[in-house]
Length: 148
Length: 289
Image (cartoon, rainbow over all chains, first blue to last red; front, side, top):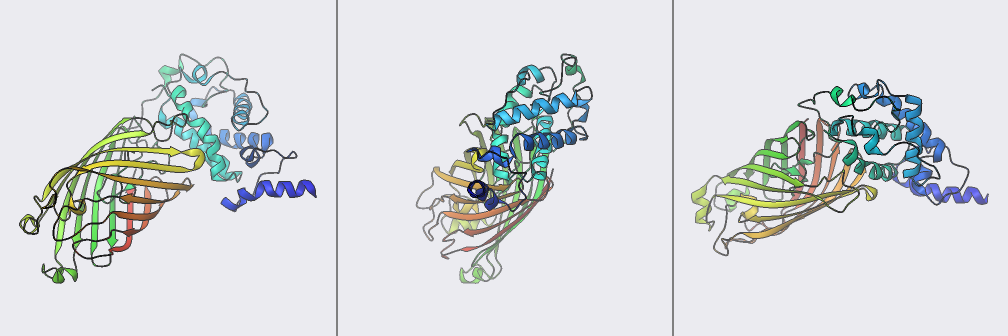
């Protein structure tokens, strides 16, 4: 009962913004509402799975992923998003500059990815304002990722 | 982040594989083109913002056309125009405004249905900053611009005190999106002599010099396609026969897609040509890419 009350309190502000289904409630009560809104690490993994599936089907940028190791990409993005959202994860991938510097990416590529992940977050019912907690972290990576 | 996990082998040779950019890429994020404001520039309803209109990224060209209706207590305005965004750097705009005095024209001695027509040609250049990407700093996107304005009925405008029926506004605009607060803020300082944005000419017996006027906008991002906000714009009071009030509005803009947006606002423009409390509705539709 006690934990039910607490999780209700944690979820209330999310419901106020948008009447969307919440991802599966995490077991632990965290003081990080954005991380909670993503459904913790399992929720992030599910969103990344959907987002990457959208990327590799997106005519605008799918060619960029032709030779990518997709399962590894999903693992690393999950680690990265989890870290950016304040979760207790470790990102073991290369720096953004190392990973993208030679790819010749443009702003349109960067934004296409952001759009695909916005749809994935929408699918998972992550309220817009918590989506923006992640996007705020990702947006400045444009400086390192986009080289064209 | 794009390929945080692209493992090992693909590296330097990818640069050669980088495809040529599309000329019309519609590559900017939804809503980041802004809407077409009352003078035809990219912005909100009554304020001009630092965002470059259209959805072209810095590798591409965007553009749009718009139609706007403003219905006030004693006047109506119909405006329409077109704008181009070049490489997310330069904005070119043209806007035509019919300011219809309707029945009020007779009361002003102009004749029923008398209308002023104003043309506005705009040039905006982004100087630095990116309103969206630069979330790691407080530096806003900053642009400067000029608007070349001409209104017909010059003899009449001069007869009521305006010094000219044409003029040039110069402005500097700063726009910033605060993603974690879901807010967009804009402040613009405009050097202008325009009476009611030029619809009543430029300068007057009280003042015929450039004075700084301020446009401020604060918008809340409800979703990636729905924005609500409020704006305030100061107006010079150069004419002797009538005062002028600061303009205010509250607006809602809905971006159906990158091709279509609809804006509705409640505007309070105060006193116009001696008629007080000019309030009403502002409706605008934009189609572009």
